[in-house]
Image 1 (cartoon, rainbow, N blue to C red):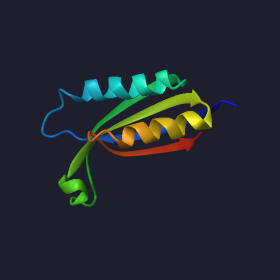
Image 2: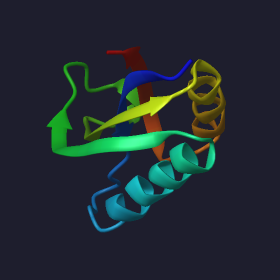
Image 3: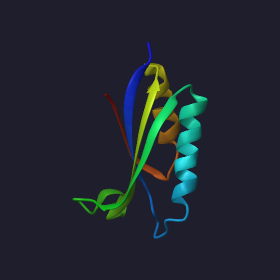
Image 4: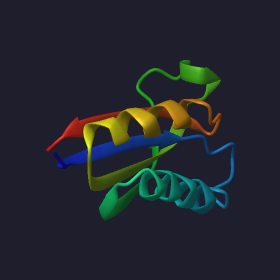
Length: 95
């Protein structure tokens, strides 16, 4: 049974925001190729971390995806994105 999810991703900036659009495109492709239907993508931008020693970086680029998918799709995408060094954090919740 398909459900509606929200995925929050924190991406590494490495001093540049030019590569962010490529990362957002890669996440979009991962979700769609796994069977998810995207509803909305919100680019929240660069945010400072409360604890600056996370991954030796004081900030990240936040992106929120809303999509409809099977629960197994979320697990598959999460596993694939864990291998991407540019994705620092990812969190999913059912809405």
